[in-house]
Image 1 (cartoon, one colour):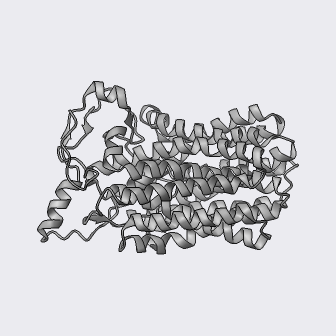
Image 2: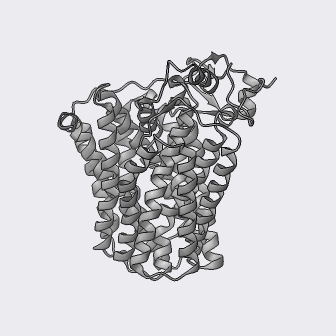
Image 3: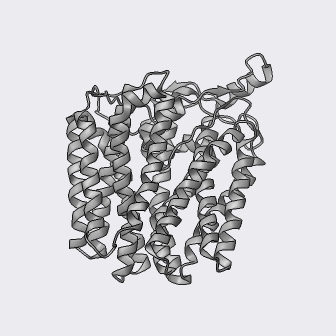
Length: 476
């Protein structure tokens, strides 16, 4: 690990400063907007705009990287983010804030993709897992530390808007001055959304729902706190507990999921989360109890995100994981856009308890769907190990994490396991049908399509298990 830190410290330091800046501005806007008499739905539009920008950045920034290079894109987007951050207090209009949040989301998606590309390129096969783990930990620590800055600042002042701008600007110094080689950025394979759904309906539905949960939690937590008349320090502490809970519970839950059917863990975690949200919705809780609620919510949401990706990968070959992960992240991004919007609308109708109500409904839906899917498909014998993936990571880091996950319980000598693996894993590539691609859309791996790249779509001559656990005939 020391060797990894020695070779990657400029990048990790830059990411830490980026997360400090992003964490401060995310919570600050919710507090300042409420104090400026913005409505909850207006603020939900502002918060949702970030996720729209992030989704657009994940789609278009790879093309920019391929055409003009990592360093120029990195510097340009960093300058854009830094400039927008200091404009917020000059334009106290929710419409202007929403537009700026789109720009901020686009910019942060770009700098994350660039940083993660560098990290992936400088790490070796022996150190990549440790480097990615360090990256995820630094992300968490950066956001938690940002809440300390928020707690001791004045949301009505100018300093809390200026500090993130300075932090973001400083974040690029170690990265741009380091002697990292410029990584290549190749066009990846594609996997149709319909095929991805056929491979894992639970993966697609689950990642969409958890996108709404995550964006509601971290987009609207500060709005909920201000509406609930919490102090700035209490809001910062509540938000910190969301991340600390995820940091503490991710590893033990992940290890447990490598030994027990992931769907059972997913089901019970969703049930627990729905029950906790019901209690927080129906009963007025003291602040210490709210901190426990936050820790449990974050501690469940982060592992559930990784569980869904790991479960989907259990039905994929190594060659397909990059395309599938990018597709899942796109679906997650779409769900993230709607999370703050519905939460803001609910808070306008039923008050601050709408925050917990929305998250509880999503987890109840996830529990119900997971329970239903457990009656339709058997557990795969051949599985990959759980990997901790942060919902804030781009497709580059997520793909690298899942591709480096070790396989567990392969049972190559077991004929039944081998037969199930042949049935569950999709390993054959075909040339995609243009008409089908046009109708269903494709999930991009987060890399640019230059026109000369291979348009092959990963498909299956060995289709996924059907509703009765047998291999169905291919669709005509």
